[in-house]
Length: 278
Ligand code: PDD
Image (cartoon, rainbow, N blue to C red; front, side, top):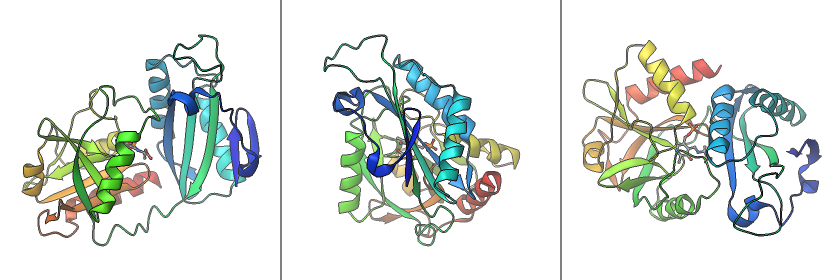
């Protein structure tokens, strides 16, 4: 496997960053995960735009343009002959002697690697995902895609221990989002509900693309929060992320959503998204 590190393509075993890298020491870094299908990057422009926004919000000066990042990612996919999977990208503030205060003239560290993954024949498709609710313990700027992921790491561990594949994070009585995905429910009339973008959630790239596809095909979208109780009474539930596209959620805290099997609306949305990706 070949990785990209600060301008060079190197075998993964030789890829190195400094122990003084602020990403390593402080989690002072931004990341993006982009899907690759049939060797093509999916929604690449949305991901590079979000990277630019996140880095800008915390004052990391991007040393390469979003277009250049897209080009590097294409080259990395080719070098790894990746057909289906993910590209992970991380940009840190850079390297300097450990100090909470950062210098303004740092060169950001930029690292990328590929991971192959079955996105189309997802094992979760047949039964749908079981999710576990956990308290949302994250900071107030979840719109920034920072690598500080301890709350999500612990939430996913709690979910796994409960036999679930994802955690839904709860705050003020409503679902904020999944630990690494956007959350949805489907109403009896076939409309879909997902939370509006704000500082409380990560603005999902898959969400953005999917909501547009939904609107184009006459599926009504309501952007508002929903509670666990409402989700349990919904006809269907689902999630989106670059690493899963669109998946049905069929169980919440051990209780079935609707009839407990993947429903037509989420399945149709998944087909629409995959058509768009291809
Ligand atoms: N996670 N919400 C959170 C908290 C996320 O971490 C993610 C993505 C999403 C979905 O965003 P998108 O559709 O742009 O992938 C929502 C990635 C996949 C990860 O952390 O691996």
